[in-house]
Image: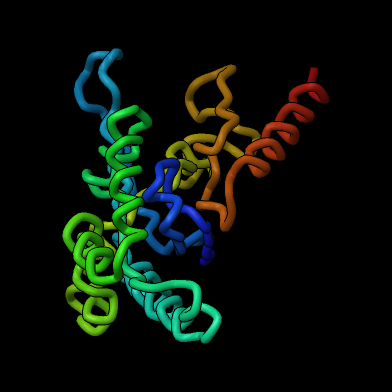
Length: 223
């Protein structure tokens, strides 16, 4: 698992007032996603179902991570620098205000000025316009509510992999051998993150480069 801390949450004025702490599972137990055909037409995109958090162990780890991170806010240095910690996700409201345009810049600039005002006004605006979940301590004290939040908030983080995995020819789920050669299709190789046999425990960029270099060397050596 990993944690990322940022001193700003978004490009706009309100985002510059809100720090973010993000936790995620690098090595998941949930590995049962699938890619299926929507219909027989080759132009129709396939149906992709990641089945995130299909394995309950991943849910438990994210719930535990949120409780662990909450404890950091009790440290004196954190209490002096941060107030109103809350649980957040990429909700539709956040997506809308994250669009870079003049209207969002103006609205968030006005709200940011008000948030710098009296404490009573700040707390009212924060709870009315920003907070979309129960107060953090209340959320963490309720297992059902916390699990519902984790399942709702969890998203894939860009690095899709393992949809055409390599494996032994006897493996019914394997698409390629360990050189990326597609079973049953002569002269075709797959050389990208889709052929990973399991999800890597880190970002995939360097892993893809290494796999590509290895398979490229094999192709050159054979020809």
